[in-house]
Length: 300
Length: 232
Ligand SMILES: Nc1ncnc2c1ncn2[C@@H]1O[C@H](COP(=O)(O)OP(=O)(O)OP(=O)(O)O)[C@@H](O)[C@H]1O
Ligand SMILES: [Mg+2]
Image (cartoon, rainbow over all chains, first blue to last red; front, top):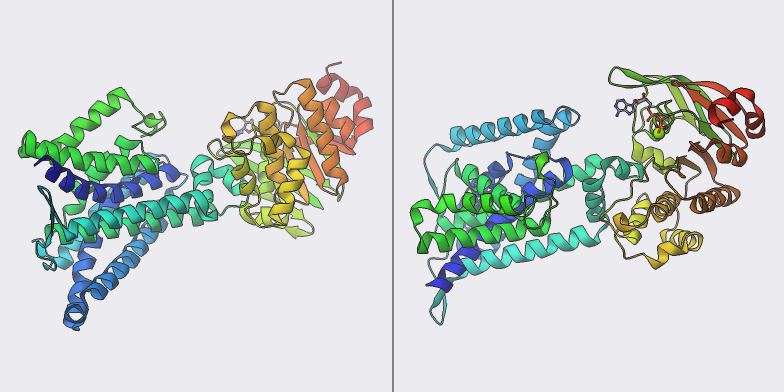
């Protein structure tokens, strides 16, 4: 029972972590809480359904399921990345020198716009993501893990390790860290700050797209509102770990997943959505900067 | 090499530069002195493209760089060591230097060797986070970082600020050495005496415009300069 809940918690926690990374990276660079980020995740889920339906219609899904899924993933990521890129250019960049509240309000506007855009074009009712894997999985000792859970966890781990290597070792990754620390100085050494900001949005949105697609497969249902709850939870995870910190987003996400899953089964599942915030309050009281963060949270 | 013509720069409603005109010729060390708030840092930030002048023009090697983005200006060969050093605190010393070479001007490996020869302490500390260095070491790192882009023109904003006299004289010696190797230098300093001794020419900035200029030696002997900036 306990281990089973740990597996479930890790699965959903790694999804939270993927979304939290987007919040954290954008905050780290722009000190902006990108409220539209949850909507990118929601779009990722919808785009997954749309592209998979297309590949099913042309017969690819029946012919080669892994290839169809892989192409669905790539296309969702590319589309979400371009949404993220465009949102930054249209809704945030013009406000870069405006008072701090302005881009925040713009972000909320984008979020509401995207929710309604999807509701109008896709309908207000739940959409079903086709059951592709059934419940097949494997058993070890008393724990059952579905293949889908394994795929979700592995995919997340691979993406997070890749992101870390990218930020640590590549030229663009170093430029991102430099911009996060001092934008003026970064441009004085020749970094095109606009490009770095765009790359940050592209990466964050791509990760959210992967998360959206995986959750759509996991729960099988999608609606235009899923970005709201997931966004709030991932944002909580980011703050929990210390917003602006990549490591923090990963640990915050996983911690949150575990707390929800264990709290849901040992205490009460009624309050599942509240545990996140209880933990958040405790962490902020004890360590205001988050688990891995700097203590500069008053900026929020 | 560098020419500012009647430059006006604003912070919102505040006019920090009110028609600044000066030039720096190839190979020179030129200093800019003036009281707090005179507009010295604003002048450097305007040259580097961080601040956009509202009027006037700036030419670098005959090309107007007014309104050009900072990263393009750096690529043209103007590098700045800003006031307060602005080391990337969480990058290592080595990574700070690598950021200096971001533009890809010059050969990063040989530039790094050169910087390490100039400031051996940076080599010793290459794995340490930039923010943990002492003030003097940070100043060396900031100069080293600026040299990593192999600049034609180096802008230095108060490199001696807050440093012990020994470190200050080491920094000034290094500036002379850098200049001898062919880098033109525009130096902003509170320490007017040391700066004027080092410079071929100097400009005095007062309330956002140039009130006086001349050869370094002449300014050192100038009555007004002695009273206002050399504390005599
Ligand atoms: N970010 C800013 N916002 C508003 N006004 C500013 C800003 N930065 C500088 N100023 C104003 O512009 C004027 C020139 O400032 P600047 O920093 O260029 O002076 P400085 O000569 O470098 O002084 P210091 O010797 O103290 O470094 C000052 O009156 C200052 O108050
Ligand atoms: Mg200054």
